[in-house]
Image 1 (cartoon, rainbow, N blue to C red):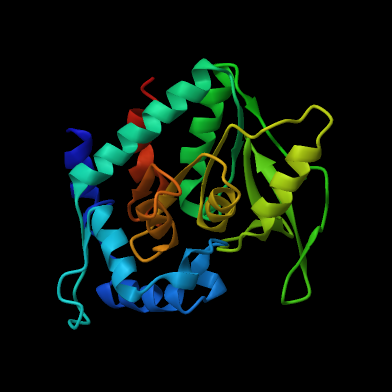
Image 2: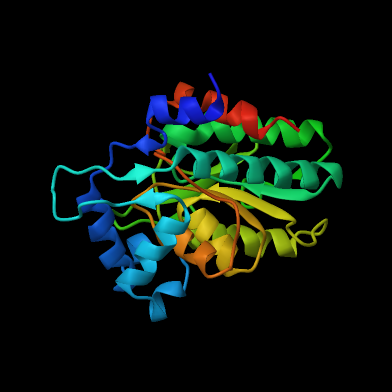
Length: 255
């Protein structure tokens, strides 16, 4: 089975499970500046709903009949496969120059095995995997009174509270990690960030080359790409069981 066929058959792309209504709602929340949807990016400040729809379309997303509550969007598998190829080229380039790479996820429950495979491949190629704030505990206060820490699992940063990996859209954690990485005594520029959600948004906002995964109802990163601020945004369903991503991961690491 080809990657394009797998993307469609698994519903990573093709007719994905996310309702169109969720895409429409989150597009509106993005242009209204809802922090849960902006991912730390500033593009929403002068963006319209039509801009967001155009940005999704450029990533291969067709919302179809937005007035049908049962409708599901279509994500062009060929466009998704092209984004996977773009990731592969950029990963190969940073591996060739043994760059400094920061990898993080706000969607560890589904995507952690994908990112850890990327981390291992880059480490084996001689890249320096950055782990800023890994030794700092309870750095980030949370609304419920708890405090979270960034922990790196096999080279991949994620937010941990009481041993639990938290799903997060917030950019705060990447902003703090980037600040720490730049201050490190062995530091320098971050050559590449590989991430999603606010981890990716904060890196793009900081002007750092970023490879990202975005769900069809998380349009902040597609909007940034449509405006030329980033490249390689891969729009797929980001919440499926982890083994579904393995063919995508293998294709991305074929360098």
